[in-house]
Amino acid sequence: MRNEHNWKEVTADGEKREVRASKFGGAWRFQSKLKHEAVWTHHDVPSLEDLEALRDVLFRKYNRKRLPWEDVVTIDAMIEKRREADSSNALG
Image: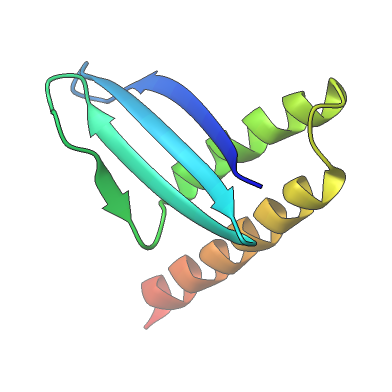
């Protein structure tokens, strides 16, 4: 079953950016594009900001009983792993 979530944001440069996160077969894929771009950019390693934004989207959907809590827990684990990787890169 495909599980897709979209949101839009404005970058620091004032450009509109659309992000798409989809879960298929237990794996998450992230894509994004700026408004003027025609092609989606695939992100093998999503940014911490994108993970946190997805967590917010998923939590709101969970509150409306639109998805299971396990999806939120999975993203929480990805956020924690990303924070650890970022802090170890900053130290070394």
